[in-house]
Amino acid sequence: MSKTKWLEAIKVSRTLYVGNLSFYTSEEQIHELFSKCGDVRRVVMGLNRFKKSPCGFCFVEFHTHEQAAQAVNLLNTTHFDDRDIRVDWDAGISEGRQYGRGESGNQWRDDFRGDFDVARGGQGGNLLKKIEDEPDKQVYVGKQRNAHGRFGQKSEEEPAAKRRRTEDDEAGKSRGVPGHIAGLEGFGGGLPMSFGAKAPYGYSEKGKGKGKGKGK
Image 1: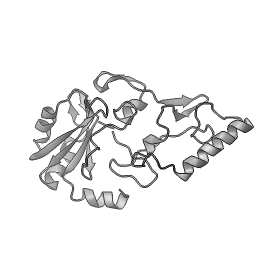
Image 2: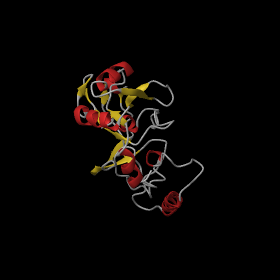
Image 3: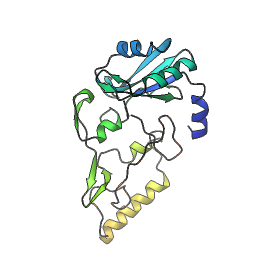
Image 4: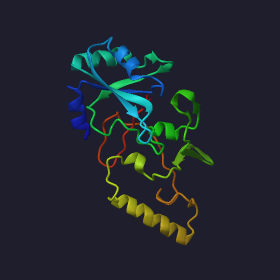
């Protein structure tokens, strides 16, 4: 969805994204909290893609846009079930979006983090590693190369940019180019991949990733 279409959709949306939830927070708890702001039509729990168990986010749909707006204004950053939750607009849920997209089946944020969070499944996947001598940069060391930035792309399609990176990697190895990092083929000749500010949840432009978070 383009930025323009996403902005148009949220002007009339009745759906909210709720992130940074505990894995143990129930649908009933969420329904009770959001019902304080209006008549909740449904709660769609975010699930681990493989286990089909809650993984720390959900979608809440109200009957009116005005009720949803009140929930954003009143509940965003609320301390709920021992966590500060994120409540933001969503353009509308579609089948498949209720599942985590990370390698573990949870959200990418839990695959990337390296800390231990008992309410978010314990130890994080630690799939972002700092580059030695470049502490401000990180590299993704998981198995799904580039998948975190191309969720909507069909697996059989290989973009030209990716083909060029692969060719550059192979050429770098054959020439013994300094700085080439073994095992990180597909990352532009061993250059680290930076992870900066996230785009608004639900919005992505072609070729760009989208972030979400409670997910904060």
